[in-house]
Image (cartoon, rainbow, N blue to C red; front, side, top):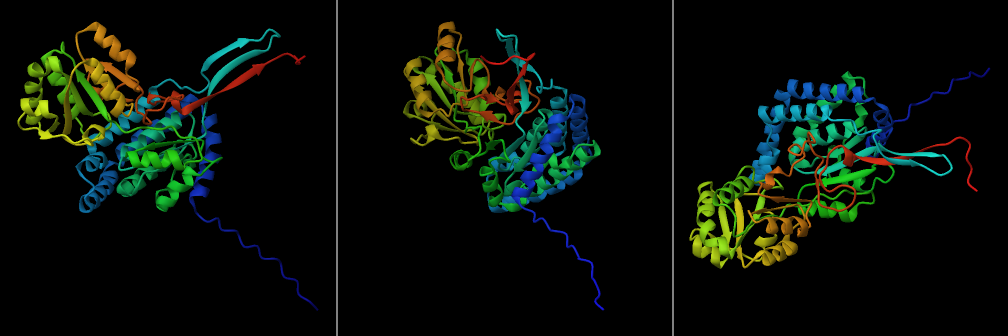
Length: 429
């Protein structure tokens, strides 16, 4: 007699990998795309509340990142970007609430008409699907991009870099738990930090899983993502930012704006790096502007004419003009006229932000028209180039490219469009 044994089925084990996490985000993006505006608002408020409630855990994790970063000598600028405290976490939570309060871009009609045959056409905004972000030492970006992605109906995959590993682990956990509590799939927020550089590589090659990729960080990181990715990339650029002081520049405006643009937060991309002074204004404005900068601990890298006016300035090198210092260092040069200032900007600008200080309407109009940067200003600090300041609540980044997104990127820049056609039996002849 034979004994029959039932077949034993061993459940398959799905190996955790960047690809499985990206696939989970892709699946979750179908849910986030269907969320109502109210549903997205509830999810974002749950995240904001969870960030506040979890601030002690977040700060403890961030302290470990800061200690490791200091030991590895990553520099004061990156340490400043990395740092989270109660005030910054509260600001992050407030930014999430501000994003929740913004109008929902999904479904917004941006164009349309009726064809001669009666078919009605509408062009409406729709989510991209899965937004990927690769960035370094910026735990605030973890929250900002997740919030903007969710408000615009997207899922998100994050690679935040080793410097913020502990902070981002806790932030992602807090946000995923908050989504679950709001009845939204926690898979809509993914991180591939666990896989190191392999995670970033998988994202860059994740065609069909990542719909758009946004790099934020150093020029080398951005260049790597732009050149190696096989998925569409929205390029954010380094900030070699200029301020021009023309011969009519009021002294108090010149001093206050330059000091604010350099000193308020020198480690960010909208901080000024080069000040160009028209020769006709140099004797009048440079000594006082320089004195105010020096009083704030700024090291001035000056050309020969600047050093004659500011003995404390150090000599510039050719590299200074193309350098994003991200520190209390500022390059300063005297130029003959506005033509020379514009030529300098064309050569060295990264296309981020430039400003002119002037009361000459013709000079202002020419500057605004000719400078080809994402944001061009007159008589204002370059520090205003920011999604929050522009009313976006938070920002994905500041795009320096010339495709659909340029300048601070908010909700609309995380959507595409599709055409809806409504007919009544029409056929094409």
